[in-house]
Amino acid sequence: MTNFLRWLTFALCLPFLFGQGAAQVAPLLANINARQTMSLDGQWQAIVDPYDVGALDYRAQPLKNNNAFYKNYKPQSESELVEYDFDSSGQLHVPGDWNTQREQLLFYEGSVWYKRSFDYTKSPKNRLFLHFGACNYLAAVYLNGEELGEHEGGFTPFDFEITDRVRAHGNFLVLRINNTRARDQVPTVNTDWWNYGGITRPVTLAEVPETFVQDYSVQLEKGSTRQITGWVQLNGARLQQNLTIRIPEAGLSKTFLTNSRGRAEFSFRADLTLWSPENPKLYRVEIASETDQVIENIGFRSIEVRSTDILLNGKSVFLRGISLHEEAPTRPGRGWSDDDARTLLSWAKELGCNFVRLAHYPHDESMLRMADQMGLMVWAEVPVYWTIQWENPQTLHNAENQLNETIARDHNRAALIIYSVANETPVSDSRNRFLRQLIQDAHAADATRLVSAALQAHEVADGNRTTIHINDPIASDLDVLGNNEYIGWYTGRPEDTDSTDWISEYGKPLIMSEFGGDALFGYHGDAHIRWTEEYQENLYEHQIAMLKRIPFLRGMTPWILKDFRSPRRTLPRFENYFNRKGLVSDRGEKKEAFFVLQKLYRELQGGQPPKQLKSSSY
Ligand code: GCU
Image (cartoon, rainbow, N blue to C red; front, side, top):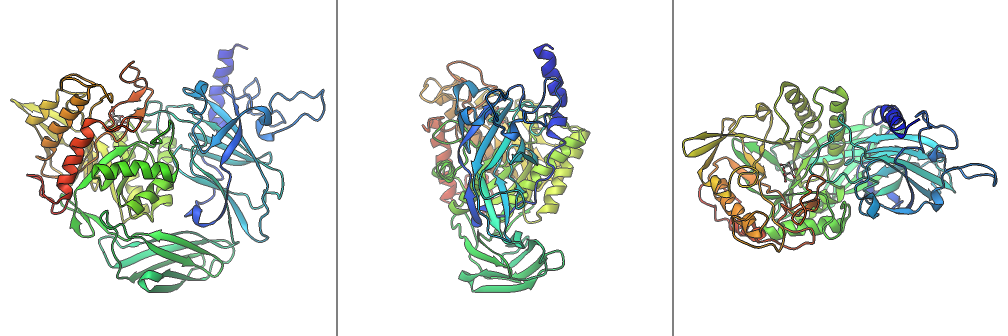
């Protein structure tokens, strides 16, 4: 059988191999790090398996015998044939992408098997969950030679209950991670970011009581700055319990009774210091049932839209933002840690930001919690990016699942104000239906936040001026309009912004979610020379002048904070597989344009409203 044919049969079996998306994933445990946990991070054994011989026989049939890598089988005698061995197969660090850990894996797309052995003595009666921050893209998870389940989607958390499967000694956890791109996936085959594969975020064992606090929401009611509303969901046998919500610093303690499904809903008044970028106040909140307790840090703020204004705690606000990818600030590869988040957000703060767009997929939980602490409002996004299969119900289910997992993880974060359901998607009936479903899902799952999307308006030349009309049909379903434009880079010259006007008939606030141009740090020259810092600087100056003239503009997130890896950027000398639109280079060096934007944001921070923009506080 030729290699091509074997590959073909493998490709045909891929959906069968990985099953139809997530199966036995357990409901997400909220606030994993506040639980009794054991980290499984560190060096894991790893086998790179481009032909999936660890899962398929040469007829491309799923392996169920000891040749299946998840069996972690060892030859019982010198004459027994076993063609794999985790323990002599090298290691990869978890969390981490595999691409930047071994040179030969930089462009690798396919399967990698991971194995981690561990001992764990669980307290009797307690339950044990295995939690993954994220794995890109498809994960099949096995414990002690048994399948736990699968998860699809590279940027959201998932967990499995292993209470009855774990043993005190000699557990072996095996994952097959595959990041092969496919048309029906979310994102699909084409992205302007690196397809980092691997167990990219922390892996944690969490031990909880038999009946535990599964999840909760403690937030201010929509449009209120004094009414707390929320719910708590228990999981276990004893679902009807007394429950107490305490906010000690505010002298608040409220008791409720969960119903027969383990759920309590509540609403009560509270005089709290409101969370804002200027004062990111977080309160210790204690959620205690008769059998469990979880401690959370929550900020209380209201966010809403009134006509073309975005109101934070009832006051109109201008979102001084920047877009960023989840790449580590000072080393190659995916970011995932508190330090990564702190460094990236400190650069945003240094720019004068009060807002960040986490593009184009849910970033690690540490980023959201760091934004809570540092006082940065957040635009979060699911990777419905460019042209995905709008007609494919499986693709819609996948996108909905990623959105719900994002909301399930982050719905208590004060910093998180906007869910974005898409980026630069071509208008069509099927696309509109698809996105309307996601917008509905977001509002249904979380009524307290705003929903947006990064649209692409089209320009109409009239005489010597150009008018850009935001008229995307789904704009009527969004709370806030987002728009990406690249005047001066992909279209025209930077100076063309001087004769460009913007209109929209939606009477909604606009966030210019992307604009920018590439510059190679240290490459200097005349401002009309592409790739120079001066070209980027000039582009920013003209963009800012144009943006100041848009009466319904209430925020911006220029593209992008830092240069990032992209497989679409092949130009030697200037790109070398990096998108160079960062205001900071991939080595953390600030380009001239960084200071242009910083000057504007400092001007806005000082409260001197730039001419034209009518918003009351900046
Ligand atoms: C697009 C897209 C980004 C991309 C950027 C660019 O607008 O949303 O993901 O990186 O343009 O071309 O630099």
